[in-house]
Length: 246
Image (cartoon, rainbow, N blue to C red; front, side, top):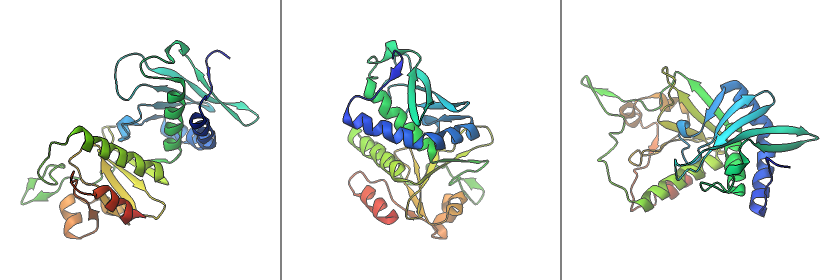
């Protein structure tokens, strides 16, 4: 049927099955939160925006590597008899701007999966700046800033994506001005929490109690309430984080 997206490859079929499994929980999440904009919430490798629409989800998504071109939009809905359908409002865009059929399926499956695990805390700030002798420290003043190359950036993005995929819960905080906190927190199956940031110079923090992440950085270090991992392009910091939360 024209305008209905169907998975073609075996990988896309698995993605579609995952989307169907997570659909009901995602519908409840977008009803609760209204709009889910993954990029604004720190998951900037997926540009999908989801909105509540009755028993379905309105979506729009684009190519993460380019801002050029229109965004594919449409609706994900329950078609009855347990079947989930992806309707595309502008099917002429399929295959354009790097948005192949199965790429769209994969992007939406990931977005629905993340949304199903999403929790938004209101009026909370993770790892706020601290004050010493009345002087406020910059939030990104972990250590001397480093210019990372493209390989390092890809490693950091893959690390964030891997953590988020393996998490059982994704937590973001909405500030009083409506913007989202620079840190995204994921709860791992082990019960550990990891705070990460898209900024290449920000180190991830691992804690066992999420409340510890509402302390400023100076306090959390002083009290040794978190394990921190310096973002060292020459080291195996990603492996050490994953071992710490296993």
